[in-house]
Length: 310
Image (cartoon, rainbow, N blue to C red; front, side, top):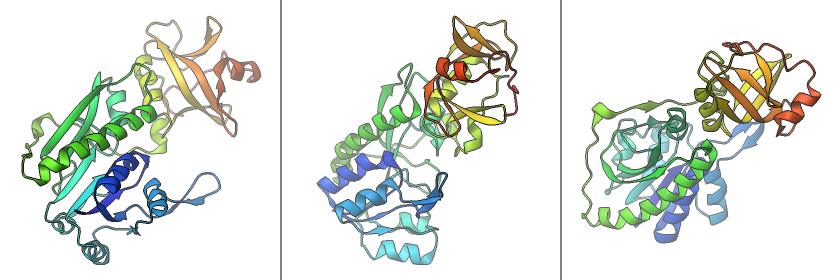
């Protein structure tokens, strides 16, 4: 079975490894190299890095719809295309290339949380469970029929990064379990119920701003969901403070954005409740316990964080 794999971030690596071990992985398609970080150094995707180690050809078209990109994929003569967090919607001209179609590994229980950030969306919403869906792709955004799903409980303290790693391995196992039945015609795709669909749009760095006019439990879920990316932050004394870990109290007399101490620990009033700061990261420094930050940040306790604009 000749397979072209399409993916970009670390989430895709377990599925990539699974395909490489069981099938003839003839090429991979991933996002172009891009400058990243403070030094704007060129960063390659996790998929490209892994494929280079495996000796697998890598394509990096800026636009998958370009005729040159489509022709490059066609020349590899794939029987199947497997997609995991690639980052672009596949046009019909690509979907129609492999005779067995295109299979997607999606990190949610579709039709809940279609879109680019399903893991973060599930934690933000307070979902008790999430999972992985293997689906047959169509031209829509995660709208194709379902081949299989597996569910898992979301841990009470689990971060977006931790959940992503678990779902990546669950997805790779499910993919290998389902593919033989699908390829043999023993697995019939089941259409999604569009009436039950919810959406998880792409996240930007600015989405991490903490709005203390929101309930404290919602802010605590945001900190978990956005760790490690895009991160949650506030601005104090003209500098950004990243909140890496936090808890919450449901009730507080503090006003939204008011910084105070609760049993020796820094907290910030929300609406309602308060956000307990546990691990923070000042600009240009390493993460540290919030109590250590407070000891060195004179004036932080008692200050007022702009509750809605940071």
